[in-house]
Length: 337
Ligand SMILES: [Zn+2]
Ligand SMILES: [Zn+2]
Image 1 (cartoon, protein in one colour):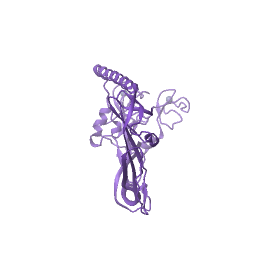
Image 2: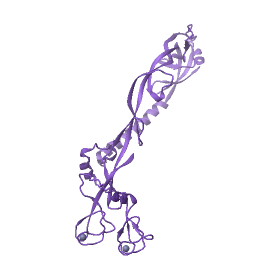
Image 3: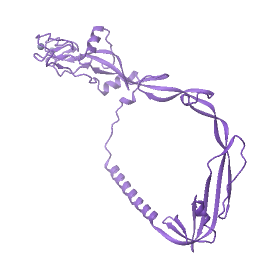
Image 4: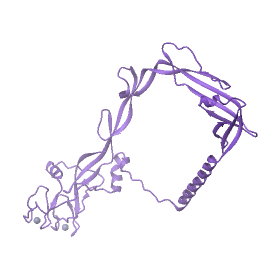
């Protein structure tokens, strides 16, 4: 978030002794002559508008740094002053600089000032209400229920039975994708597209937010607000960021594309791979294999699926096995008997 200075405005302070509102840069009350107190609170002259200062000298003073109070008589002096304007005391040691950087408006002023500006999401404060008691109880109950369910689930998972079973069926399926090197239309951010590719249908699209201006960026600024410079002059600033847009294009590229998938399947324990003859611009993709063994016990049938071909080859229909079945009826392990 970049802070942008819009300009400077005159501030006012109220005299403790007589209640007169004095201009920020005036160091003793215009009515009763009382010195400005060290903990003075500056306010905006008019919270609804910004009347920017045009006087260059006043702006220079605001930029020079915070005023300082004389260690001997308390009088406010300019930042660059060496000796006190009132008592002539040495200001190079022991002078107290005014606090800087405090934001002058409160939230209600901001809302008024924001009427002509779009609201800045970064300055919005979301009030959080504490959770009601019943919600807390519901949450605790829900967590407890989850724990109980989780424990039950794990027990069922881990509770296994060893059963004698016979292989009643062995089924296999093998797949081989065939890929071809083809011209494909793809789309991406222009900066990601290979320079030799032909691009078309380019569109400006929002890509990300940046703190600094970039090529093709749009500035988004929040509500202006005023900062105390410590001089009686306020600095009006705005927090801004940049929405960066980039070209998003379609382009043509050569890629390997799956054009067909060859499948072989069958029953029994001898599986074969599908095959075909490839043309010059074709290749085989990553092949997959899946073997399903059906076991029968005295009362029930269980299915077990694996990619282990050497294990599957032992599952000759009619052979005897020992299988482990968990609480959900799933086989967790098999071994030939
Ligand atoms: Zn006064
Ligand atoms: Zn002094």
